[in-house]
Image (cartoon, rainbow over all chains, first blue to last red; front, side):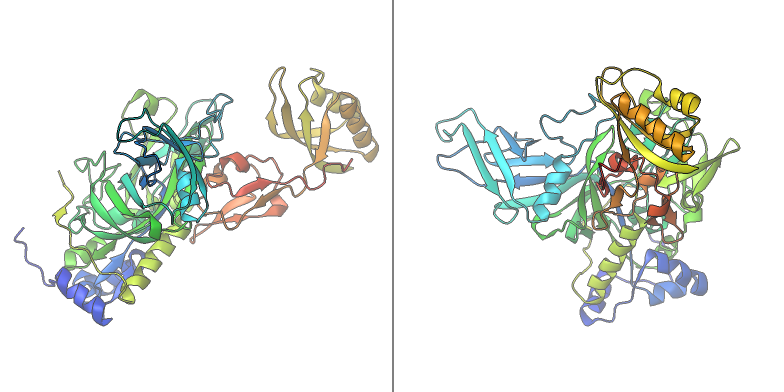
Length: 390
Length: 141
């Protein structure tokens, strides 16, 4: 605090420019060249907002759904959407449908590796695609809520309320997973071939939201974001938000660190940005499109948003033995430039790299958000409290 | 000489004979196993690239059928639903022929049907179910 900058802008000034259409918005990829050419001070003078984006499976996602009352009334204690169970220990007809909940009767991993074809993430995608879902719920019956069982068909439109509420999204950096064992393993990081046949990673690198504001100087409770194709909010630090680990000189963490709790109105979202996914041998999940606008309040933010793949590093982790045993060990450090090149070298061996995070969709998120801001459809949300840094 | 990629389906009751070994020994067919899922006393499947003279090829097929194995051609059986593909890249971990690859620097996932051996490994691996196996001509033989 108290640091003085050559360029100083406020959220209010930037929002005023968005309203008049004078705002200058670029994506995090475009910002690299601008800072390179003009330097951070001049870049901060010219650019007001840098948009970021990511699209990848984010398991810790789900939706609070209210299914509306029935006659006679019901206080649901167990609810299923297309046979996928939702947590119903909330009031009356509220429930939380988690992205990783698997449809009842799924064979799971009984015939290994299981396919996990339908789960909570798929229900959420079906809902935003406008499809009808079949709902059933049970109760034990009370004087005020006598109904013991209800069944009905509903669409997202007919649900009284539906809120996407994701306790852990937008992981700031993530492990690069390998399998040194002698048989194929199926993990949440995808299929890992034996003897380090491939190295899987999952981050948009230089375009990823928290890589562009590594010390959370502009992101916190109330930051308005792109979430699932609509405007949503950061509702605080996500679960497992661990900002305290090792960081590079540029402030970017060298292993998984910050996370975001996000929420938004599911009714406004779209299946293009919320996609139910199945990880073979592991389970169901939801791929989420997430983008955060970073206000260029000063030259420091301009410098942060100019981060490049070659300046962002992560650790190579053994998912066959170390990870399941809870052993924290790195087999090496690699940059996202190396990971995105298609191969990395570990112990003299060249290993094919495999992304799980879509750069094509991440770029589309950043471009969409840029368009919204340029057209004055999206104003910056002033964070009420920044994410904790320690 | 002819070379074809075949899908062999072993019913539960199929003979436990080492058929691939006999194909090579008795019919002089060279083989490459592209994918195999064989369980004792359960249904199994194998994707086999088989090469040999036309006559031996035919005899080898007759031998397979005599053992109760269902043989179909694999050509052009895997397709991609472009609307569902998110270009994440997960499929490139398992594709053995490079039919699925990443274009750099855009990081777009390309699908080259010409290179596809129809091993179908991408089908259960694709997180968003974009890859589909569509048998086009089940009764080719």
